Length: 240
Ligand SMILES: Nc1ncnc2c1ncn2[C@@H]1O[C@H](COP(=O)(O)OP(=O)(O)O)[C@@H](O)[C@H]1O
Ligand SMILES: [Mg+2]
Image 1 (cartoon, protein in one colour):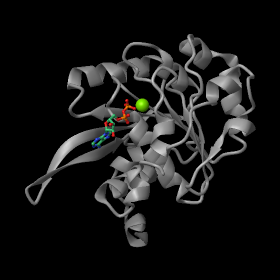
Image 2 (image 1 turned 90 degrees about the vertical axis):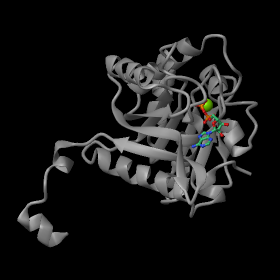
Image 3 (image 1 turned 180 degrees about the horizontal axis):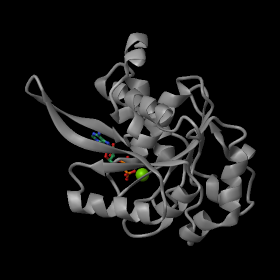
Image 4 (image 1 turned 30 degrees about the vertical axis):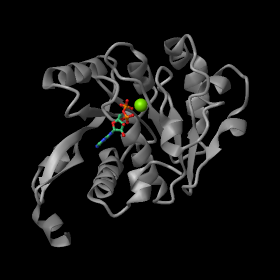
């Protein structure tokens, strides 16, 4: 059984927040479209795996064909979110131990497939940067509407930057309890320096007080286009 809030409690404010992020992504690049989306953060534990798996689920709920790939080859966690085995996965496909079709998982969620990490390799950066990996993702694009890749933190190694280079957009997750503003800024600079297209940031795990109770929440800030900043003209107002 998946550990996903968007499945367990689809009417909760948190699930609603995920649907808000989904809408922002859908509107974020109308011309090119967002097909391959990755997630990263400054450090471990800020909520990357939680965010990408829940987000993928909200897209699958729209009847889109969705694939989640665990690209965090150092600290994989996608299999735990879906309660599935990580015996075979991405790394096995990349070294030809098995085929994608043999190890992709169908989940209890309609339209949502999962490719777990597989055996944790000794050379994760090399694997992620390989031509093989790029071609693999390119070929999958024909079979899925959206591909979500969970990535390692951008902090220490370049893996997340490498994954971003073959993604259409990247979401930066900031754990309110884990990261200070300077570290978050540094993560953004690192992503910018590898040419990653940051489509938004999720401020995760900040405590919100409602009726005296704390609950942990999400806040998404997407990139604002010039168009979305301007006021509506008369004709648009009449159509709204
Ligand atoms: N909004 C949230 N509120 C409370 N706990 C959260 C939230 N997001 C993530 N967590 C918890 O924080 C821990 C780390 O999350 P995870 O998604 O595995 O982070 P990462 O993939 O960045 O290492 C997990 O135990 C997860 O359940
Ligand atoms: Mg993770």
